[in-house]
Image 1 (cartoon, rainbow, N blue to C red):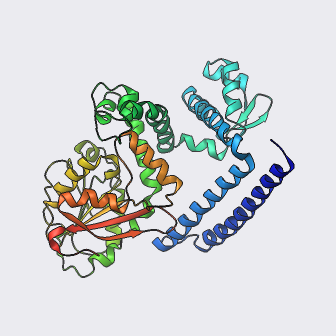
Image 2 (cartoon, rainbow, N blue to C red; image 1 turned 60 degrees about the vertical axis):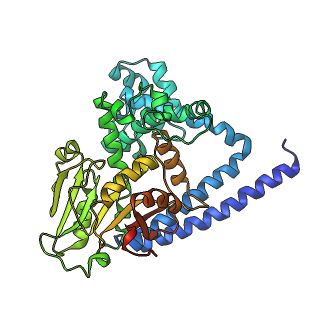
Image 3 (cartoon, rainbow, N blue to C red; image 1 turned 135 degrees about the vertical axis):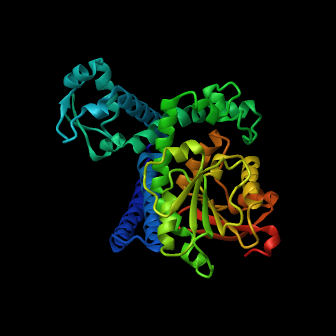
Length: 420
């Protein structure tokens, strides 16, 4: 009810949120300008933390402006917008509009795409007020910098991945959890994804293998997410960790386990400069065979990380953005194969989110729910301890980035001494 007191309270909340947001804009502007063009980890972390804080300030401002009731109705808005954008991408509108940002009418688009004009207009009505397209006249539309990004294969792929693969299990999450008596998903064959997609006992990976186009979009999506967090590779102090190691050309410096297309391996090799020794990239044979990019100084090896690790006694085993795909039981199996290959001087470096016990960020929260649909999870330090200890490993160091939930967990063989 819009009583004078209620209006005054909302206006005060809006003003307070606006002042906080304005302060955040100034802080982010200063930090991003100060660090522009710099590629060091400290600078990257400062910018990432300031940006994360500013996004949260913007969310809180929008929440204050809308008020509690409109925030509930926002779910209608978000669902309609997402559905319309996905339909327009499939319809071909993103590709049909001119890239020079000149416009096309609904009639022209409908004729070009051989679709119903009324349907097109209704979908564009949902995709113009808040983007990604721009409405420039009556039933006339143009690209914006935001809509053009959907044409980048990796970003278009990650959007399709969100909607086609992850949205159905999220929409039916409550059904699955209710049916399983509100237990945490722990099975690769029975989880929100397999429930929503009706995989008939197959895991997500087995099911998706039947659909090459979907699998391709999934891989594009993974590449986009990996590229967006490339700066986190430098969180671990590679040069410092290896500086006292007396190595030869045959020494195994780093094994990048499940390293995909090798972006991390390539960057690590660059960090190490002229340091003698090998950096080895491991992933499934099909992934390794599909790599077209040159990876100077990086050796490639087909390998399934559920099988015995063939590289014995490497100084660092590195696993990035893999464990969050798997349950605790599967993670312990993966880690056990690595532990059996480690020497007392070896280190395992896990690069993932390290969620704080309190105050997890928005990104960590949605990532964790997304991983839940696949039977995986994002983890706290305690969670990492629970999967490392049964594998015979102990945490020796945890490095986190203030203001974000990204970090690395360093572990060593439990028998190698006490951790930090």
